[in-house]
Amino acid sequence: MNRPDAPSPPPAPAAVDWAAVRADFPLLTREVNGKPLVYLDSANTGQKPRAVIEAVDDFYRRHNANVSRAVHTLGSEATERYEATRAALARHLNVRADELVLTSGTTFAINLVAYSWALPRLKPGDAILLTRMEHHANIVPWQLVAERTGATIKVAEITPQGTLDLDALFAAMTPEVRLLGVTHVSNVLGTINPVREICREARRRGIVTVVDGSQALPHMPVDIAAIGCDFYALTGHKMCGPTGTGALWARREHLAAMPPFLGGGEMIKEVRFEGTVFNDPPHRFEAGTPNIAGHIGLGVAVEYLAALGMERVAAREAELLAHLTEELGRIEGLRIFGTAPEKAAVVSFLVEGAHAHDLATLLDLEGVAVRSGHHCAHPLMQFYGVPATCRASLAFYNTHAEIEAFVAAMQKVRKLLL
Image: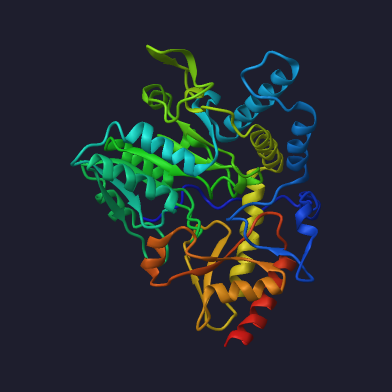
């Protein structure tokens, strides 16, 4: 029953000049250890196009002021640009702008749901259902809530291939389950989960759904309205935006019923010592001065991706992933973790007899940046019986020549280690 949400994207139009697109990213021109940089760590953080860098710089040079407070020109300009990001995200995700809470990223977004929605509602006897492939950001907040409420954690397992066992997942949606946390795309395996089907089954059972979209937004079109979830969390820095940016989308009825997570300035209408009248959502959940410049940069990043076309991005990355997977398959003793038929451009691997950290360190000497470690997914590492893996993660700005350089470096490093 492991079915994708949609058919594979069509081939990218020949008119896209990917070399020109790559030239938009200044960092990709640098050298590391005297070698041209081969950046294969976009699942960790994406690189930023010049337009995003310039937007952040322009804010601090020409518009720097706080948002939603001052009536002077700078304050109005800052607020207008900040709110433009909310509008751009809404268009990109096919949702209403007033359903988007701007946050520091997915971690904050999921904690907001945990403390503002789940904590007041869960009780002993309730259960939270999570999948084996979740990032720690979609595990630890629920453990903290469970400890305080008496709820329990249930785990939906995966297949050795790295796909969710949907029959087992649906069977685990028993009456005591109040909330399901599921990643849209695994940050380790690259598996694209059929979240639309999963959310539909959860909704039939009255289960609230929280989707971690951190690794989906950089790779493919995402239509939250079509997915049908209750909450969707996203991170800006993985989708070409600045760090410390992101958002939580939530159904309006949830936002209206949720108490504030943080208290302070801007999230209020009126404060008296006798009590406070809170602002309407989403501003109710945006206490204090936000990362204004960062979110303005995120808005530019969203518009940049929209102009490229996420269908084209998905097709380009599928082409690169196929090349990378084929080349890695020729390396003796190399094991790939996650071979789902529907994958984003993420490949986790190990070479027999070599530690992941040693591989990554030696690859760095060749100018190749990959991530090594548990990838904030300890339960997944435990499932595969390994302490860590290396992960090569692609983006549309990578090239086939970089893949060949990476594989050549891998062959050289393998000889040094074995």
